[in-house]
Length: 324
Ligand SMILES: NC(=O)C1=CN([C@@H]2O[C@H](COP(=O)(O)OP(=O)(O)OC[C@H]3O[C@@H](n4cnc5c(N)ncnc54)[C@H](OP(=O)(O)O)[C@@H]3O)[C@@H](O)[C@H]2O)C=CC1
Ligand SMILES: N[C@@H](C[C@H]1CC(C(=O)O)=NO1)C(=O)O
Image (tube, rainbow, N blue to C red; front, side, top):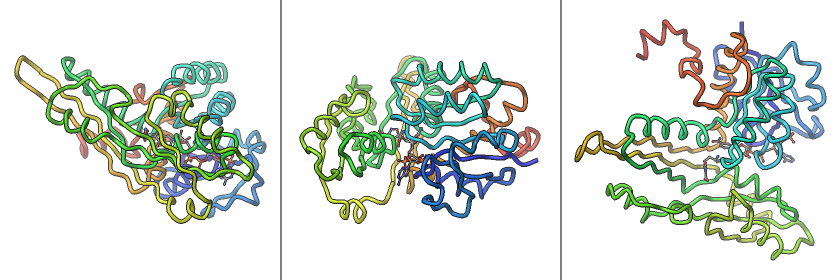
């Protein structure tokens, strides 16, 4: 029996989820549900429906993959849709994950659904590797570096600023900080000492550039903690120079298992396409969410709560013989 999937929101992630589902032996895509006019949304072949039509699909969709923006879509959509469906989201406003979890958990427990939140790569796979490092090497230091690459969450946050017609954000890691970490110094590094953020913004006609710049650099959680630059460009330049979405980074845990015995754990990603990779993670967690829901394991989950085997289309017996 295939897992029947719905996509909510059709942007970079939504397109990636459609592509990823086509690669899965045990999944089928029921359709895309959008807040826009369905006729205006071009998919790779998937049927498109108005978001309001979702209520008619409660018996024909096993799990929804929510592809909205974390700045303002998911805080509303995830709790709302968890009241009707098993869902997966990539909510990535780290400072607000506890409150997002609480809101989604209350909704899912009341409805008897399962909701996997904050999966992807960070939060997500990087979070899991930070946990492994700290559980295995209690004496040590953990570091996370991203980029240079395009952050979808920060680009989405830029696009939500009044007066912004289009935007992208690149994350730049501090090479000196990386060198100190790799040298085993275990330095104390502030947020500002690890990354800079470069924003490229297209203004709406009549928007005030200084007001937009100020709204960006002071934005809590996203830009305020960082050295952030804002460059205004034309829509033509955005379309010509900023369509690729490569990214990547690494998590490193350096610690001592006994005095003088240093152990280093590193997990690295190098991504041609941030959205296609993130979508692939969301789809694997959609499989886990559907299985947890079928087993009656309801409420909100983070990637920490989910056994890795649930992500695989292989049976537990196959995993024991092939991957253990
Ligand atoms: N955990 C992780 O590691 C990661 C998390 N993410 C999260 O994924 C979120 C979504 O990223 P991304 O897909 O790049 O965001 P997009 O801006 O591409 O899409 C967000 C939403 O905007 C709407 N939209 C898309 N295109 C248009 C358009 N042309 N006109 C009007 N509305 C549009 C869609 O909703 P609708 O169809 O309803 O209009 C869509 O769901 C990010 O905010 C980030 O938080 C991303 C990467 C990694
Ligand atoms: N959630 C991020 C995924 C990684 C990238 C990132 C950053 O560049 O700040 N933080 O986490 C994204 O939206 O791309």
